[in-house]
Amino acid sequence: MYGSIKETRQKLIGGEVTLPEVVNHFIEKINDRNSELNAFLEVFENEALSRAAEIQKKIDEGKAGKLAGAVIGLKDNIVYKDHKVTACSKILENFESLFSATVVERILAEDAIIIGRLNCDEFAMGSANETSYFGEANNPWDSKRTPGGSSGGASAAVAAGMCNAALGSDTGGSIRQPASFTGIVGLKPTYGRVSRYGLIAYASSFDQIGPLTGNVEDAALILEVIAGRDKMDATSSSRQVENFSEINNVEKGLKIAYIKNIIDHPSLSEDVRKSFTELIDDLKGRGFTVEAVEFPYVDYMVPTYYVLTTAEASSNLARYDGIHYGYRSPNAYDLESAYVKSRSEGFGLEVKRRIMTGTFVLSAGYIDQYYGKGQKVRRLIADKTNEIFGKYDFIITPTTPHAAFVHGSKGDDPIKMYLEDIFTVHANIAGIPAISVPLHLNSEGLPFGTQVMAPKFEEKKMFDFAAYLEKELKKY
Ligand code: GLN
Image (cartoon, rainbow, N blue to C red; front, top):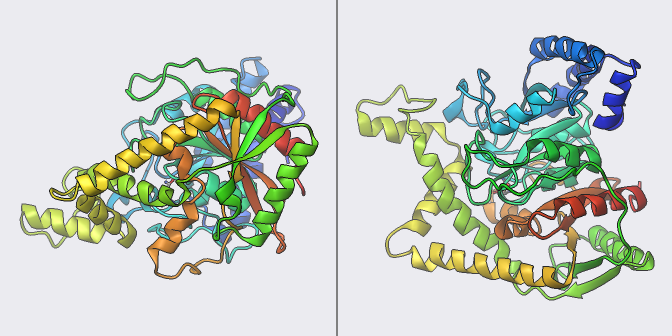
């Protein structure tokens, strides 16, 4: 209703609207739709309104930060000082953080308002927001369907207009897949672009924080604020942070690759195949070079991802032992039973499955066969990806094989759910940036996204191209 974050900021500066009015607008939307969508776990209503009044003063004095007008929800695995954070797990129920994530500090310093905590899969493990201890989140386009996962509350909230942006995390697609399913923009930055300090770890060599927004420019603006070196995260990069949100025109000389075996992939729905093929033709017609490339590892992506991420998860989640954090079983009678019972009662089924898988792939006798092999395949995938980027500016794929599915339709077979990530895990395995842009609707009128992947640290170019797609090729 207020347009992009920059437009809202302009309206605030021009006095067309006040920040308390903007916040109240979003609160009304939340009151209207949250019981149906289960996107917000908690709304910081009073706090948001009093911050709005304070920032309004700064606006009146001509001192508004870059994100004045941004009303942002936080996926419940990003910590915010003196606020609850649970990773949607019973094991952290009622846990309060003693510090704020670097991304939180950075958006607050630019006058964003944090409106509340958003539902997600437990410890960000899932593709449908069905593993959350606090229940499923639902898709605003059709509430019987999933908004995607794991950042399902975030995508539902932004798509339903309950906030104008959210911060999520993406380990294998958890920002881009929900964005695809709800018709919004989702960005996974280059590994190391954004500090992970204060993100509850799932698989540390894959995890990145990124924005879910209504448009490409907002995603670029938020990245501009949250990116950059942070001494609290040794893997954060000191690469220069460009003015991502100053979107430039694209050159028609750009060379774009698409992966041939993805177009022919059996998982792809007819609707997605047809729209994606039309997009390729459309781009060619507009003077871009668009060519098919061979990528022999498509079917190795998901297995590689699940071997390596479960290994990292089994180690990261060892800290929830019933002693240091959160839930302790009331049935414990000694130290060992405190560990066993707290973890057995505190973790959900999917999290336990992954901890056990990860422990197995790291165990003596199997580590070389599984974890070691997974590392090697990761390198092969990254090398082959870089080779493609030697000749092309971007790789495009559908973000998801189909549009949002009905809750529960994947049954009890975890593999079916894991295969949902087939096109998104690539970017996390290779450490490259990727963005999902909503361009199409399927025959049932449901949205799905197109993914653009770029070489490491080429977010600026990627945003320019994504903004071009959004402006010129969106079909609805
Ligand atoms: N759906 C994937 C998984 O279950 C991705 C999760 C994520 O990116 N956090 O692991």
